[in-house]
Amino acid sequence: MDSVKSENINAKIVIVGSGIAGISAAVELTAAGFTNVQILEATGRSGGRIKTGDNVVEIGANWIHGPSEENPVFCLARRYGLLDPEALTPENQAMEVGGHPPWMTCLEILEEKKWADADKATRSLGFSVVSNLLKGECCVNGTHSLDEVGLGAFSLYKTLPGLDCTFPKGYEGLIQNLLSELPSDTVKYNCPVRCIEWNNTETESPVIVECEDGDRMTADHVIVTVSLGYLKKHHSTLFRPPLPLHKLHSIQRQGFGTNNKIFVEFDSAWWDADCEVMHFLWEDENSLVDKTLDLQSSWIKKLFGFTVLKPTERYGHLLCGWIAGHESEYMETLSDQEVTQAVTQLIRRFTGNPILTPKRVLRSQWFHNPWTCGSYSFPGTGCSSQDLKNLAEPLPTTGPQPLQVLFAGEATHPCFYSTVHGALLTGQREADRLLSHYSSTSTNHVLSKL
Ligand code: 6YU
View 1 (cartoon, helix red, strand yellow):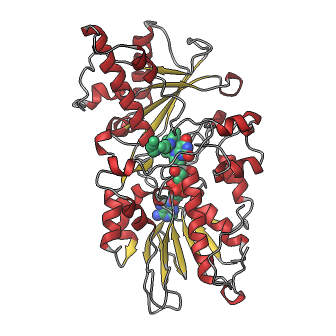
View 2: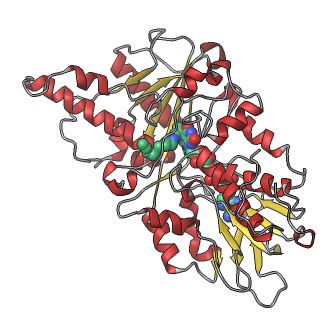
View 3: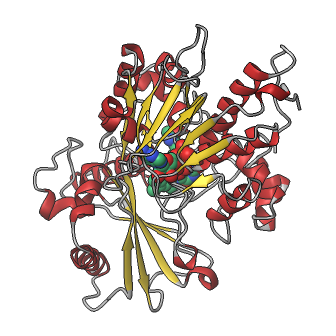
């Protein structure tokens, strides 16, 4: 690992956000010898969109997508001893699943049928299956409709080999282990940043970070890791002077949507022991046109299905429903009772069992979370790889005081956007950028990873 020149070790680096991107940046900078690294976190906890609830229920990120040697989250989780033995086997790491979560089984139904000579009822079923697939695809992409996803940029997403795996004791274990590598006072909680004033010439350090409580601190560098949703909503007040236009346009072009989960717990299982996923097919969905006219009465139809959480010893009899888009955002505005009622009706209708009653229902609300403003990014229509580069570009790139404001977070990764490993790599990328800047050697280096 290159070392930083001793006179630069005190450079003041502020990191906005204590999600995986912010924490991984802090760990790398601290390990390289920087002594003045402070994370400012708006909420009272670290982890951001990694959030484990009671009974190891994952409110946010679920899987390590592509758990294999190239995936830094997998390597870290293995190092910290956070994975089940199956996930560590070479067979598991070699499996190619094409980047889809383990729920997209509906395709098999389509493949079994000969659609060209099918009768009307069968064709109608076919449309229902396709409609269901599209709802699932909206969840994967975190978008309302696939019409909002740019075809060109869609192919930028890179999948890694490995059968997606979970953290048996919760994804947050990764966060706790990483935090333990930092000095205990590194994260300041309940400290929302209101404004980042850069290009200051009146103070010795070029950046002033102003918090909601009016506290103002100077910094040599600020790494911004807030979500793209937050940036879209607050860029005009968050930066003074404003962001350059090309960066702003890229923020606008890149998509950021909502995918929520609805957990439904039962006293006992009413599904088969080998059931992994249930899809809901609606008879009247024989058109692929988006026709969400009455959210109040039809939002639940956007829920594509339930995955069965396993093993039962860990989760009890628990289903996880998935719902994306405007219907998902509407669902967030309903009371717990209204959501429970809609889900109960849905399950009774599809099972034909009028007395099935969930023990407990819990849903995520990522769109109305003021510090996230949605779930994750996707390549919007008209978005190109240049937009992703622009999102990651620091300010300014040249001049006497470069790299005042740097940008990390899942949406700034060129091919692993929307994932935990993507976010982690962007934190390391920006730490590396500062290390190269301050490094005693001029060679471009890659730090020995954690
Ligand atoms: C993954 C998965 N997964 C499900 C759901 C969600 C996400 N992801 P953070 O937001 O974490 O941190 C920023 C911090 O900043 C935060 O703490 C804020 O409080 C703070 N902040 C904000 N404003 C501030 C201010 N003003 N001042 C101070 N602090 C401030 N990823 O790998 N596996 O299974 C899922 C899933 C419901 C919501 C996911 C998954 C996404 C990850 O959770 C997410 O990328 C990272 O946690 C983000 O970390 P961060 O540090 O950048 O931000 C084919 C193809 C198509 C392409 N897509 C395929 C991939 C599918 C993605 N998978 C999704 C699936 C699920 C289920």
